[in-house]
Image (cartoon, rainbow, N blue to C red; front, side, top):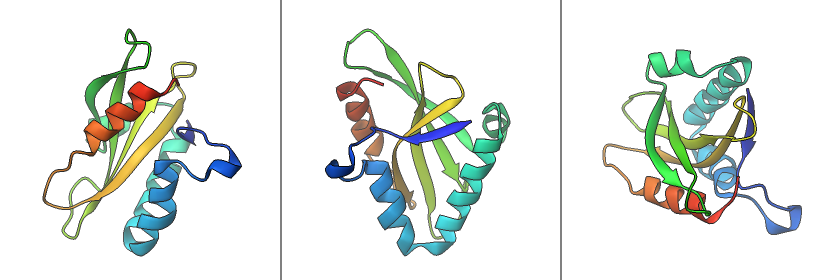
Amino acid sequence: MTIEYYPLTAKDEGFSRIEKFVRKELRKRKDLAILVQEFLKRVKKSSTLQAFKDVEEIADLEFATTCNGRDKVRLQEMRIPIQRKGGVVRIYFIESRYSKNKLLLIDGEIKHKKSSNIKDNVKSLIFSLDY
């Protein structure tokens, strides 16, 4: 698998939301940063996501509509780890429509017991961009 941060940004525009999350938020939590790096390495070596879905490390979420209003994209999340005291990482992504072996990472969060509304933010980002 190929993993890319999305949206792709020009160097002078700074970083995408997921890049900011990986570079800044995860830096504060070394334990979770190591788990994320190891997990992403495993995903890159894999040719399919099915093994991750079977053990619920990756889950399908709802569909999001793209900017043209007709295409629907399956929003998915990486669960790193699935459950743990002290928080877990959720990375939200979609599969590229041009290549099934390319994942586009959109956003992430360190999640504690409470749920968040980040999925709505990710869906609005998907709507505003063309992938």
